[in-house]
Length: 233
Image (cartoon, rainbow, N blue to C red; front, top):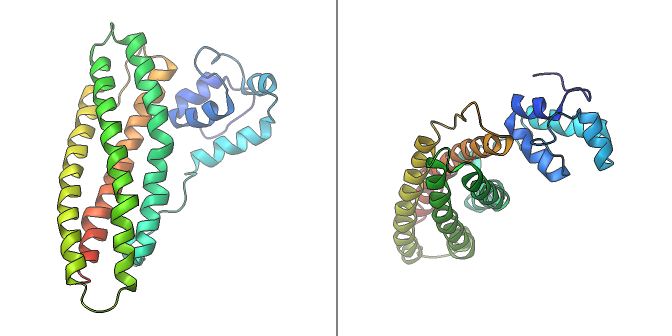
């Protein structure tokens, strides 16, 4: 759906592009039970300017995120900042949203598809591990990498300590990749059934987007940041 009109039902706008759920949720627009209302009606109920909402949806459709930086052109400090801002920032915003939706969908539809209960259990563990992992990077690993660029003299001792840390983080990345593969399998490659409600469709889309972002995230660390930091020795 290329053209967004204020007369289009909210539910249709959502179904055409489930990622729009993020904007609807932020604005308090009900795209599930209230999906039959036109966008104009939904905006009126929330005292929102319809033109502004259309512009927000259009920006999202056109790729709303910042232009992807080429990690090979960034300094170590810039790359650490980029990963924190883009990928860790994404997780800080998205994990609480997915936590709410996995819990709600499992409670509502777990009887119809027990795999949704598995998705919920898997996500609880995934969220805790990823949150601890990114916190360790932000608080310990990235500051140590940034110091390499400004350090004088022999950096061998510093890079040796980082090498041990990188090995640990890469093992955790393998665990993350395995969990993402399980999400993919449990959701039939993020394909919701015909009977799925709006929240379930938004969840599947969110998990799909998270997998895509995490793959890029892990690539930038394993294949770019870590080797370049070790090359400072």
